[in-house]
Length: 414
Image 1 (cartoon, one colour):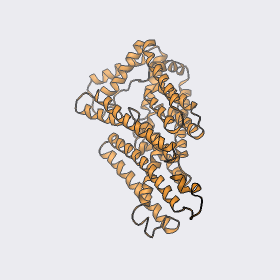
Image 2: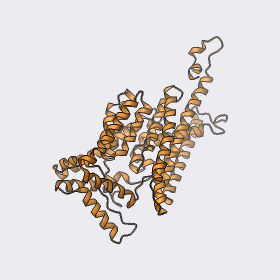
Image 3: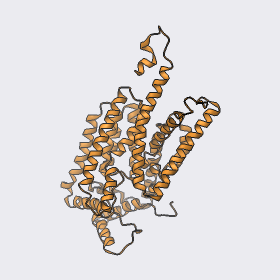
Image 4: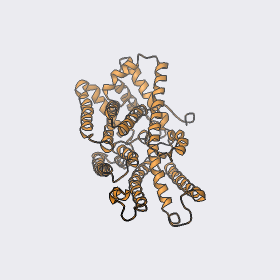
């Protein structure tokens, strides 16, 4: 991928912005002029349009500082930050796996970078800063759900929102997984929005250009993302119809329904009615779906959770299929265990191949949207499957008559 196609397209935008700020030039004006020139001259659909720096003016002082660093040093530091961020994302995803899942998952981790959201894509070669941002966020998230310390998570999300405001939707994750996190999440979100809005007063001209650059990402580059609202926006644009306010309304409806569902599931988990270990990857995927503009790099960082959810649900489907429950192929050891493993691998491979063929032959983004929504629904289903399996196992171990019922596992499970 690196040698046959383009790479570093996002990193080049950052580098050009650093050079512009270093020489006292407005990076937004430079990018807007390049886009205007591109659209005024003849070009083919295969030509990649120029990208404009679309991070808010509050980041420009940082660019000025980075401009004082020698280019070769800056390149090494940035590459190291990208690699560290990606490895942290893989490590946190690995922590979500059970002891039985970790041996095979370790073998698949090197492939995750080339299959963001389980579909083949080269987005990891873009050099987008979000990989480093997500690495810090995910590491802080692990500290939050494993030790109950969420301060670093809030700081990481707040810092990331300076570059990408939609990442404030990640503040839903502590509410879903932690306890008594409403106030901290709302306060952090309000702080992030205040940092964003105050820039219009501090740098009015730059902020106006920045908002225009963001608007042109949709009007000229058609970069809507592939959330439900994003796919709707792309469809409306293809039909030469206005995408606003239809996309805004669609997002609000979808986010409200999804948010209510996630809060309901989170309450069930806190009450002990659904398993916490299975809930964490599902909650993470649901949180990413709350982003109004889901991009390839957003699903890249949840590839491992998506893989675990899909694997678990396929395993449940195979284990409860006819012939597995009442047939000869017992799941306990021997050839039955091997046949079961082979059936799960075969089902997973077929599912994975079919979706990648569909993405290549039809369209990547709508396919990824369907896959992302489907995996999330599978995750919700797996929560209830795990509970039913636990109840069934507990029922088979109900103590004999006269044994204290209040200490039986069946009584604990309800």
